[in-house]
Length: 309
Image 1 (tube, rainbow, N blue to C red):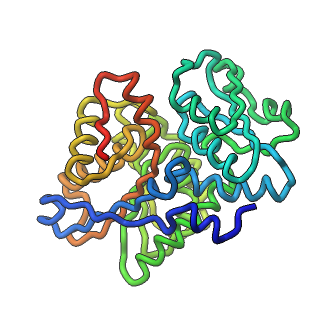
Image 2 (cartoon, rainbow, N blue to C red):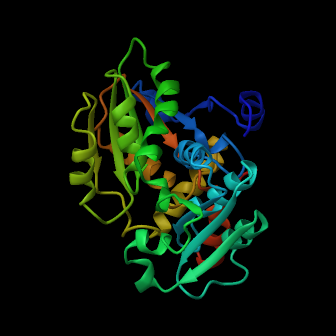
């Protein structure tokens, strides 16, 4: 098991804040900072580290030598899980949705270099009961797709601690992309009352509202989920979104991925233009990482993300 010092040397925590500069922000006296969870670790960045950490500790506690998890062929979670397992001295198995995966797939190739055993299954079987699939690997500790379980949500307490230190005496708005809802639910459960939370749904799926309500019913933190910026659904993009992401990266010297963070940043700028934020607001936007996905995204799409070094 890694010592606290080894973890401290390995990870860039607390993750830094970057001030976003723009004329529209200055005109309305609005402060916008990026919480740079993309800089935690080159391979286990963003909310993936937060969701995996307690799950890996639990695997160790149960004396499991293997983690098993699920994801699509371009999954940030698969990528990060493979890297985390190797760092913590665990074997890993990735159940991949779809029987055919391009042998040059960047995400899968990386996972295999980290020692992950890749198991490809049909989309129909993948969509069935994952507990049943996991029973075929009794030696493994199962982490749900995206790390979406109680331990994944509780892992957000560490991020909440970092954010709470910023908002000790003033009100702040936290904006973040929402997929499974794991990250947002965990933060709403652990942030202090000086925060309000705005989730930007990147899925074309409003069922997340009911799930969030059930997971956060005991929280006093105010939140809402905006469903207007999914750009057609999960992993769907438009030229407008990609152009925005490239312009943002060029002006701010910060890369943002097209699946999650670009959508939440686009939403902030659009809502700013529509005067949805009060003058003097202080906003923190969570950068959830996922930059590894830009390489496979660019290989499949005409409108490409330009990586700023």
